[in-house]
Image 1: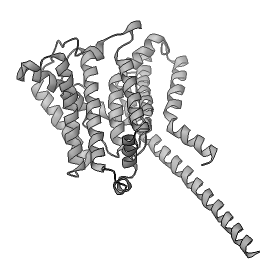
Image 2 (image 1 turned 90 degrees about the vertical axis):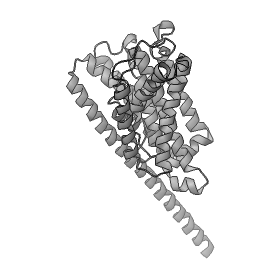
Image 3 (image 1 turned 60 degrees about the vertical axis):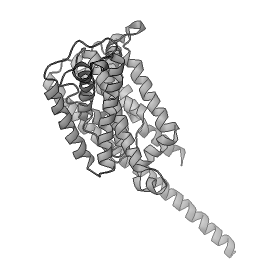
Image 4 (image 1 turned 120 degrees about the vertical axis):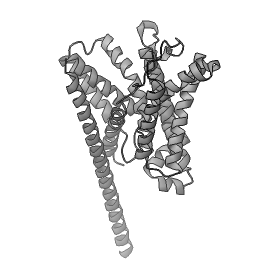
Length: 346
């Protein structure tokens, strides 16, 4: 592959960080108090919940699927764990056990979705839409009022502060993204994971357990949604039946902006971190500029549309580059073959 093509491919894979830096620099001059250290920490803090949903959605998109249930999993995993400890099994009210139950609940929801999609061959959109509605309905039924106060241990990752008044959630989220980046880019499981999303049939023929990879994607997404639930519960100090409502489509946009594709097999966790940061900076800038809440809502819808356009442009760009590279290889091979025939004839 020629150097110019490699450079364009790298730029394509890291386009989100170019956009993030450009957006930050523009707002540093245009938006009051945007580039202050306090506001930067505020952006990182308020992006933590969405970051987990973006990463979870991104993993499912890499696998070539879609998960609409993440926002309801966020609420149900926290609400289910707290209710089990408060009303069903008081022995489970220990905050450490509650954290484990929260993560386990998220994993079980993901396992159910993954099993139905991989083994029963149910359409991912319809399956996760049904799960989203069922889980939200259960939350509305079992948690009609807010549950508070919550134990400090349970809310620590969402409300705790470190030295320099830095929220605990900021380094935690960064570590999670780095860990998943290493998992997908540096391990056999990660290579199988990405290959399955790009071409499941070829992966199956080569011996990869495609169904297991698909189920793993939904389980990991469910766990990340549960982590988002812990962060949300810590931030607001309570559990409500509206937690996470309306976040799944923005998570979808963040994953696409971060390099994931509707076609599957593309995207990196660090790129998705950039997508989550862009969403947070976008919302923060509009709030600092005093834009009305309804226009902010409309702007977020427009951002989803932009994410879809960028995804399609990225696909066409990549296909054009690979097509041109293949033509040049075939042309070079034809020239060499002609030269060899002429040499033999002489």
